[in-house]
Image 1 (cartoon, one colour):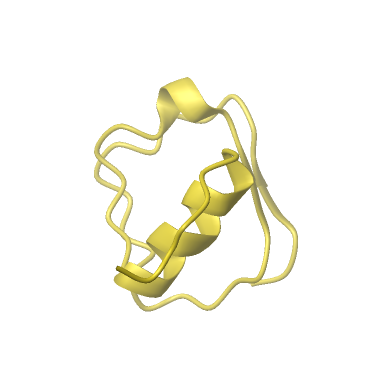
Image 2 (image 1 turned 45 degrees about the vertical axis):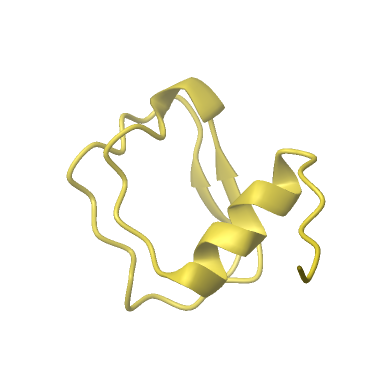
Amino acid sequence: MTGADFSDTKLAQVNLAKARFDRLIFTPALLSGLKINQWQAAVIAGSLGVDIVDA
């Protein structure tokens, strides 16, 4: 998936865990219930401004 745009879309119960994406457009308030894998979580967290560091 490249440049998928889920702006203004409720993502509850959507499972993207097996999808591959480098960038995802979404509305942060509508992420609740989205199913993703660890790598995707890092991509989404990064797009929210979170810095992920190795402990």
